[in-house]
Length: 474
Image 1 (cartoon, rainbow, N blue to C red):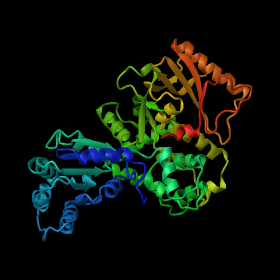
Image 2: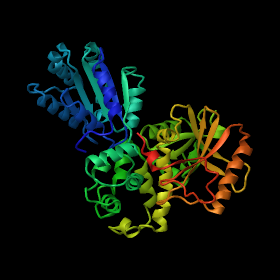
Image 3: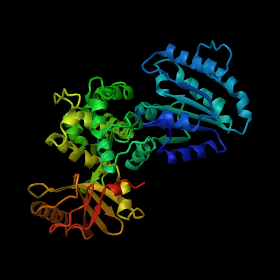
Image 4: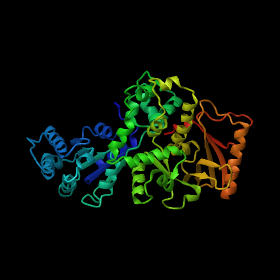
């Protein structure tokens, strides 16, 4: 990534905080590789008065050395301080003159969780620095950042100790949407059409770092092979590195993610507990929350459960993790696997599963495409309890204008043709929903497919369509 793209909302928020009339303690968090450090370095590069980054998987001495080097780079003479209290006092002396200006004095502590080594005293020292000095100056803006989302939430945002209620603002950095991905590729002169961008998005999601690895002349199959399937590809071991960098004990988190691959529609807490062996209590609740905050999973309701608290279904939504777990263990030993297997049942099956996940990440865009962005909408799934075979609708838009959109998601490289058999299934599914839920709302069948629906003799029951152009709405 050589230019800042797709972060307009976050930049506006940073501007608001930098121009506020009080000290700000800003927590920036999000999934690894989503571009947190790049956002601050690129957008605030001329305003950063002090920057330090924690050292991954190292002890207290390495963290202190990193801090001393940062002090030295910023002009503090011969930093020899021994304790974290001394370190922050040195930082205070270094920055004292900058607090007398009206210009923002930005302090950026990157990979903050790395500094919190057991019994090191870092957190009490940071708390003391903020409470006794930094918070007193309206132009001091302390930005802390970390990929270890569980630490950021537990030790910082929800801290009940010294840092309790200190954070004044939170910025959760999410992956790019399809449109943001398209804008990024255009800037890099990668000339893919919207279907190609969507196919690559099914592999990586909108993770900026992964997008930055694409060669300008690569086709989609070449890019996937180069990044994942060829020998020593850069993303071949990414999943294990991802889990290890986010969680001190990644095993239970990977068990949850592995379990969610089994059922693409999602699972309840009880089902996850049964598959993973993790008791359905506070520990499981915490882990599910952390995975959701890291954008690995999403929670949503079924129609019957939507009014009950804590009765969610959980679904894997991280595209790269889903891709890795789908193809892991299949004995693939081919540097050009994707190029050599285009249009095989295995890859076509993958595209079908992955397109559903892409759709679920673009609910706002679907609402815009259907011209209902200004209407309050709840969305959830529905599973029949009475029909055989069980009817299921993966996405329902329950609108405040007394309309329900039953969304059928179909992946196709050409306009989708509804067959006689498919038409019968769609009709029965709609009737089963109306009968079982006893809804009095208007029911609209909506087809979400890349290139719309062929206007054959079986498309008349389709009330509305959403195509790729709709998913690429801003």
